[in-house]
Image (cartoon, rainbow, N blue to C red; front, top):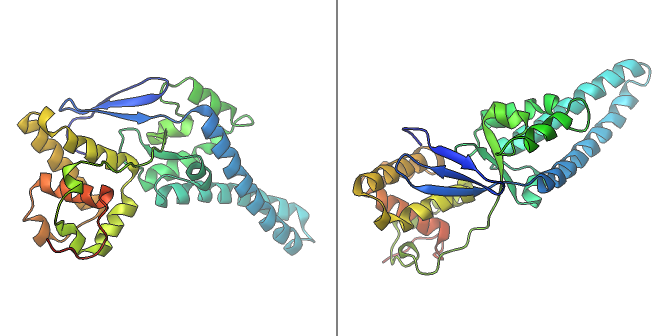
Amino acid sequence: MTGSQPIRWATTAELTIVTPEGVLFRLPLAGPASRLYAMLLDITIVLGTVNGVGLLVYWIFAKAPGFGVMVITLGEFAIGFAYGALLEGFWNGQTIGKRLFHLRVIDQAGLPLRIEQAWVRNLMRVFDALPFAYLVGGISALSNPLMQRFGDRVAGTLVVRQTPLVAPGEESWTRQKYNSFMDYPTIAMKLRRAATPELASLIQDALRRRTELAAYARREIYRELATYLQSEISPFPDELVEMLSDEQYLINAAGVLFGDQQLSRVHG
């Protein structure tokens, strides 16, 4: 999103984002318990991988055990960093533990996590883990209204609870006889895979609140959402987009995300 920065404030349960146009969006923050359980599962996966690699390294460097220990130490850090950074960066802000416990890392402005943010927050785990058992990270999270550990503060990220997408039953975008986006099943499928629940809910709320927004605010919000979808998530062909208003673009996108139509060519 472009323009002025949104206003944010947090309670113990959720983050409220107020856009410059006065529209409110709420994101449920992840609690310490669920984050701990997800982290323990991820640590178990990493340690299991490290132990497997460690046996191989010790066997290779049996005649130089000191060198083998150094390799294992560096390997543990590298594997742990790569596990978190790569999965979060390329798997919609989730590791295996976060996905199983329905958590997701996002940008603190409510936008999807960027790859560079995933790298920074995982690199900062070195400091969060000090002096032992993630004490620095735990204190940082518990003392922050956004539940951000040190790495989250540096990277500008936060962890939210992933809410399931429930298809609205009587919305206009589920009753369209024809959705031009369905003519491009590969791109439509990409939109379904790439759009996070938070982004999909943002589109849904913007369309639902159409009559509540002033005309200028509605145009600006729809323009920014359509531009973001087109440039970052699912670039439908220019010749198709040029025929659609920003509002119709979002309606078609919502039809893909929430509708019951099949990803095949539909004739209205």
